[in-house]
Image (cartoon, rainbow, N blue to C red; front, top):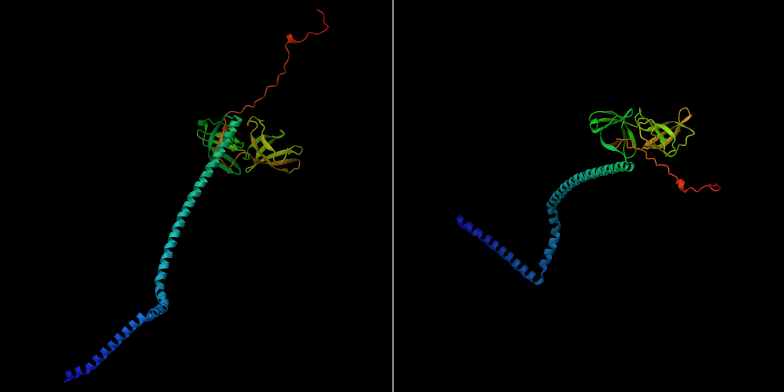
Length: 303
């Protein structure tokens, strides 16, 4: 009895569900027919897409943002790597350029020294500088050459610019050079322009001329060279250029400062004079005379 009642009650529900399905099917068929005739569903889809487009963009923003961040991070890492490589390459190129500039300057200095030797026909030997002592109270060079290489005590030392100093100590493998700027050094000099004789003294950081008479014809810019007096240095080697003139403390004489001609604080090699250059003297011109046989006989003398 109960089962028959349940079956009887479910029958109207099945009928209602079937009717709803038929209604939806009829609506779908109607929409399909209407779309095929008027194409109005396409317009509805376009409008729906326009309305949904912001939602799609908003939903895709996290993925797009993550992709952009990954791309930016990869680009920054690549740029950092490229900058590091370029910086290293720039440092290597700078070191190479500096080395080439140093080599070019050294070649120019050696060519200048060779030119001085060839022009002056000097008998010299090249000696490398081993160490340098430029203390204000001690201006000296240590050469990587000694008695085994023929270096002698008292030998004159020059470079492409002019006089550097003299050898004061010789060991079998090294030699010590007293520079012109040493406070214990003095050189007899002369003004190349007029031959005025003076003495140049080392002052630790420069060379000075002392006890210059006020009447002496000396000007700033005059070239000062060795005079050869005393026999220590050969004459004619450039010592420096007068850079300043001033009265001394007594106001009775003048003092002068010299700009050294030699590169006292630069260079890797120096030249040692083996022999003192001989000054060439031109022989006096001889006047032509007629032989006695061609002299005319005195007139007015009878034989």
